[in-house]
Length: 97
Image (cartoon, rainbow, N blue to C red):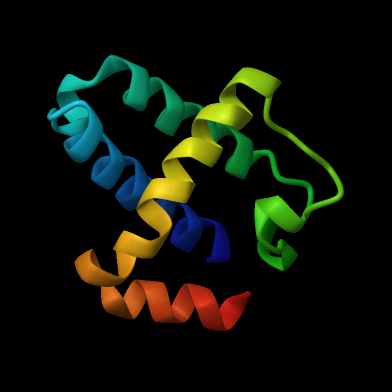
């Protein structure tokens, strides 16, 4: 269940980033679709599953260096803006962390 919520949040963050930086919807942005698929793959393979914490606080770094840099950039931009797009999801995420 927690993994599905994480997937919903990461998709929203990538959509926010894509709309602002590339002026594209996620469906039209191959780079961001690739990042989203990669994030889903990593979440599906997370060894902690429903006991996971934030990836940034994890002792195991599952992401390849290039993808880790991309997702960090997306999260730095989108993180504060999630509150505007989906306040309930933002609050629930903050309470989990």
